[in-house]
Image (cartoon, rainbow, N blue to C red):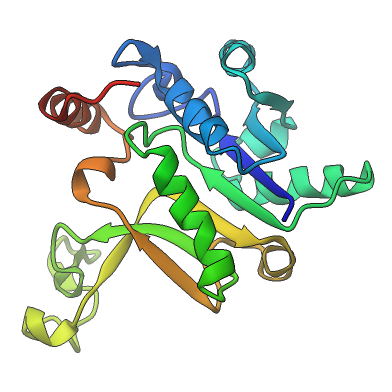
Length: 230
């Protein structure tokens, strides 16, 4: 199989400034993911997609191929799926076709090369078109609440909010670190969640998706506790 890894790393971040290249255990956060993807030896290319020159320089020095994405793909409304589809389209126009794509988020620095390998392997051994790294929900999702226009809390799913947790069965969440797709299916559905999808379970301590200062402090504490170092 011809595989490609895409690491989206936009320069703008609202909640944690410059989160993709903030220092994490002695390296810019992005570098942990680049090194993990490269060390799998699964990919013809490990591509960092960005619009930011500083991120591009860090990615290049870490060994990634750099793709300077178009401005419209760096807006707050652009999706990562759109970024990946655009890159695949340009690669196809240049005569480069791929069987599988793995999208690895830079904000999950404790995800390992093995986690990437296992998520990718589901596409072959799991007889599926989509695979995603998953973990347990930290709260019961059926008890989710919204505020109405009057400021009162109302259940998102009123028909199941009173259900016992054990009646819900095993429920997982995509942990925001790693997605793998059959390229033909990805081109058809244009998203990372589709039919014939399987999940690779990752424990909470490797599933921190760093999007805020609180996430960052938690991840650093876990890294210290576990002796994380790459």
